[in-house]
Each structure stands twice: as C-alpha cells, then as structure tokens.
Amino acid sequence: MPSKILRVPSAQHLARNWYESPDRVAKELVRLFENSPTFNYNAVFSAIKDLLVLGVSYNDVERGIREKVAREDVRRNFLEILPLVRSHFDGVNPDFVNDVSPRRYPLAKGADGGMLSIPFSPPMVYGVGGKLVFPWISFWRNNPLRGEKLQLFVTIVKEILAQDPDLDDAEFQIHDYSAPKPKLPRELNIINAADIPTLSASRRDEMLIQFADGFSLAQRMINNSEAARERQRQQERREEERDPRQLELLT
Image (tube, rainbow, N blue to C red; front, side, top):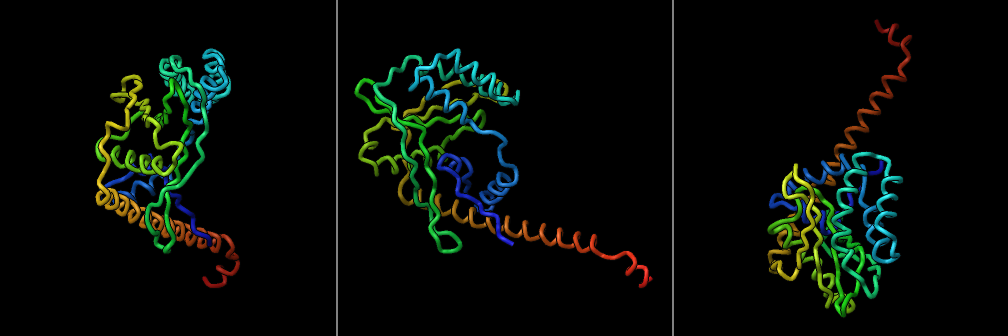
C-alpha cells in the first residue's frame, strides 16, 4: 500500500504552523492534512492582476466574482476583500508588472535522508516611480503572522530575494487583509518588511529544525493512521466475503 505524501507547506504556512514543540507542529500538520481547505484565493489573485495588468474595470471584476463563484460563503468572503484591493491598487499605476518564477528554499534533511525544501511562489513584482515593489499578499481573515512567526517568514523571504539580483533591491511589502477581531470587518494593513527584524542564523536554523522534526513526525503519524485504516478495510472485506453457509457448519 503506497503511503500518502505530506507536502512541505509554503513559507507563509510553515511560519503559521511553527511551534516550539515538534509534537505540536505534527498535530497541526496532520489536522490540516485531514481537513484541507475547501477553497482557495486564486480568484482574488486573478482580480488583482486584472485590475493592474489588463486594466479591467472594478465593476467588471466584481461582476465576474458574483457570477463565477458559486458558493455563497466564499463569494461573500471575496467580495469583502475586493473593496480593500481597490482602495490600494486604484492609486497604483505600475510601469510594468512581471510574474516571478517559483523557487524553493532548503529546510532540512527529511527522515529518508533527502532534502526537504519550502516551495515559494510569489504573486508578482511591479515597478512604479522607479521603485521595484514585491508584494506578498495574505488573505487570511484570522490569525495573521505576528511576533517570531512573522520574523521567520520575513527572514526566509529576504534570503530568497537576496539570491536573485533582479529582486534584491525590491521593496518587500506584506499586504495583510485580516480582521482585527473575528466579528469585525477586514482591514488592509501594509507592512514594510524592512521594519521587521530578521532572525539570527542560529535561531532561524533552530526553528526550521523544530519544524522539520514535526514534519517528519506528522508523516509517520499519517502513514500509521492510513495503515490502520487499510487493516480495518481489509478486515471488513474479509467479513463481507465469508460464506454464511460455512459459518452455519461450525455452529
């Protein structure tokens, strides 16, 4: 029976699910693996590019979301974000908008000896007024990155950007669309990553090792759980395949 593969999360999700205890990391990763999100924010990312790159009107973008997003709760969520997107990007007239190729950041060695790496897929980079802007857009409504988790994320991204001569001088911004409290509406908070202190190399390595240990533990937990479920399925199949007449002979 093939094992189910747990994938290393993105830099942002890794930071959000980092804890001092590898056991806690593992429990969170298993919980997410077994209860994966039922939607993504691709439609909102597309809306931002439509507004910036293609010059699509805000009304057309809004109408597209109303017509194409079938689930009411997801549609309502997107329409809560959209005015905040407009309030910021309406005043931005970029000289150019470029895609940024995905890349990976080394995490640690996995349980099988192979190198685990963090996937990093930036949305875009744009130039305006002679300045290069690298926006990282977070649509989480609750529990945005704070404190040392935010520092870990910023540290990873800054190191990735520093490896690319075309992005090294970009202004790294975090666009946080979260709500200040669960029952309050969302707000757009733009954080200049230059204001976030980076971690020391030793602390960064310690945090990444703790996550990697938790990740390896989560993979074992998932494999063991799947093996137990398979044993249960096999037992149920055997029960179903038994001939009731044979059972009668033994009674």
